[in-house]
Length: 536
Image (cartoon, one colour):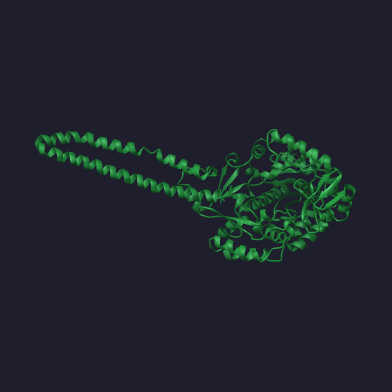
């Protein structure tokens, strides 16, 4: 991969994220360690207490893998995780159809690379883990893919609608075939197209759940790289989650105060990513709907449910599968079950982790170190060639298309065409005076004819000037079209990594593109995460 770099400050990233990357000391009160300080990471790894129920966790994960349909390819990773001294790096993401946006891949690659790096440093088994966001119920957020076109961004969505249940339990319907056809019609036919869709169709088939399809897809991309798939929306794993759920209830008021106080402190110089609620737990009703639990006058309420705290604790003990963690409680559950050195986060996740350091002590835990993921824009060779013909750096294309076009036109208008042609005409007039006087002295009747010749020169110069202006306009339009094309590729709907599907690049460069990318970074220092990478 040929690489260039771009400062995060030139791109749409928050002040909090930029400060975390460049000046961690200013945020040290909100996080548990500097990911770029090797000694702090070693200290974190040395202080991790292995889960008491690690054997039960491994058994539950094996059952989960069987349900997901990936048990055979996960066994070696599970054996490695089961070792007494093993540690983990974790990342995770929503169950986006066909893999979600590109950053899902980049988070996974970062996690694999970190696990390999720290396994060598610590001389202990370190497992990269992808935590499936299998409790999320926002179907609309996962049900589309983004494809850049020459001058626009195409968003292709499933025509299905969510039913309020966690996305993971919702089944893929026959409409997936129409979705596939729509996507395929937007992609250029290549040598890889048939193989790509044959692979996708093995996973995204009617009757499977979205969690099974997504897990199988990610497993096909990264199982051979040692990635272990983990999730929590499964009976035997929910059994291991009961104490976390109960503590979130019994300590709800103190947890709210701790989270709110830390968020207020963070807001003094930065921003809060998530609004704090009185509860961090959802209730799954009889229809499978995921309802927020709220406190009111000593009772707990969710939809038609209204129970005392004592009754709620009893319900959690008897049927933990009827409860689900929110955005704050999910990371805690993850770190109760796993010996986590660090979590690989995107900018938004990194921000909400900054609100929750004080939550971990309620569960006798320390927050893991938060590592930023790789941030990458992939530039195709055709785009790279036309970028060379324009005066803008890659990061500049983050601007509005109107501003880019105006900047280019201003640059074109800075050429002094009028001045050049005015000087030319004046020069002709000046050098013509002496010949005209000479001709007049020979035959005064020829003075008019000589003047007409000079005027003819001037008229031809004016015609040429018009042609020059038309040529510039034509070149200008060509370049404006190029600007639009580059913009649609690099910032199609915001930053490329947030909107474009991995399928787009797999169709162009092959199904092994992510393994090749991972191999390219294998020998790199992961300080690469301190800037945005540009290349392909």
